[in-house]
Amino acid sequence: MYEFHMPSLGADMEAGTLVEWLIKPGDEVQRGQVVAVVETQKGAVDVEIWEAGTVDKLVVVTGRKVPVGELLALLRTVGEPAAAAPETPKTPGTPHVATAPAITAAALPRAEAAAVSAVSARLRVSPSARKLAEELGVDIASVQAAEPGAVISRADVERAAQAKTLTPVAAKPAAPDWHAQMRMAIAAAMSRSKREIPHYYLATNIDVTAVSSWLETENLKRSVTERLLPVVPFMKAVALALREVPELNGFWIDGALRSSASVHLGMAIAMRGGGLVAPAIHDADRKSLDQLMADLRDLITRVRSGRLRSSEMSDPTVTFTSLGEQGVEGVFGVIYPPQVAIVGLGKITERPWVEGGVVVVRRVATATLAADHRASDGHRGGLFLAALDRLLQEPERLR
Amino acid sequence: MTLYNREQIQDIIFDALGAIAPEVEPAMIAPDRPLREQIDIDSFDFLNFIIRLHETLGIDIPEKDYAELLTLNSAVEYLVRRCAADQ
Image (cartoon, rainbow over all chains, first blue to last red; front, top):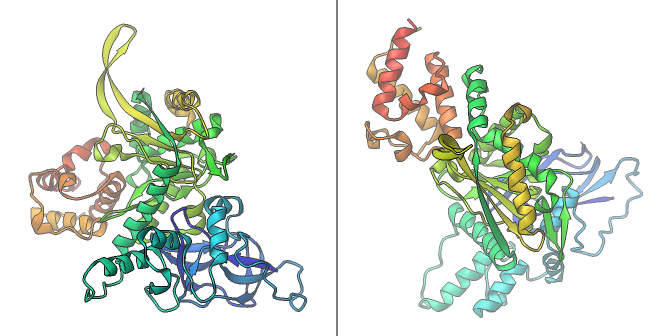
């Protein structure tokens, strides 16, 4: 019997609300099939399953808020008879991660999973909410969850703390809105990053005249619907350069670097009205520019309409941000844990450039790297930026 | 192809912008200031804006002409001219 658990859809996720089951008992499912919709602080996510088989039982009903790692459904794997399966889930809370195997395990720190299992059945509290309650001196038993039966979250603890410090007649605050939730999710992930990750930062100016001209020529041949965005060749170059310096592509888990053989490029995408997500474009190093453009289009469209897939949320191996769009010349990113690097691209501007002793005008962009010093050193980071520069000088080979 | 007047073109622009940035209030747009200073759109949104204009008006807008779409006024001028030229 295969156990399908609530996946961690990013380091900042504690729990998700099961909005909809797309399967029912008796259904055949395939690996990678979207089986449920889960509402997170970053919007609704289509959750995939990574095992093929027949749905045996749906354990969690829709509408419930479920902590990461909790059993959602049972699946009979191929060849497993229906009757033979005694429904004996293993030790509760064991981080037996069902979705996107290697990666979700990465995104779900052991300690947090253990804490989930330690929570008593009566009082369901997310680990970080428990910690926050201790910090704020709030009695966790007195905290009310936002909805009856839901897991007590950090937001609930904060509300309780506020109620405590404000006048005793303070009105019960309304449930936090979506933007507030998104802010808190970002706050949690970025605070953890700055608390735990010793960042180092590198920057280099790259002459991008060749790649920009190549793209202009290429887009001239294309109809408006087939045009490539300027960021696309950069995505490919970043992905290829990461292959040369694998210490920047992967996760830092349990005191050790786990490099990833695949490059799943997390694209930082701003959301309308504030907030951002950085879902993955899978295997970016092996895709053509046309494919990357198609994937990016699909991804941004779904980010803006609020429907991402669980694997996109949980498995980026590195993040790429092109804030240059908004006119900044350089961006020094904050690493999204447990990733170990974030690559930034600034605005492309015409600048004076010395070439063979002569000052010429070139299109130049500042590429940056913020990396985890536990996982790599500045020298290796420098090699990455040098590789990026080299790859961008031969745009026709990026295809 | 239809011949459009300025008002019609302006409405088509507002429709295209509204589909991308629903919070946009046409009356709030200063016609001679860059659109991207007034509306929070990135290069992806801008490409979708161009694609929508292409679909509605049936004209292909090359990248080198993007600068002509900088402000509402210049965009209206440009699109009226392009649609007339294609007649």
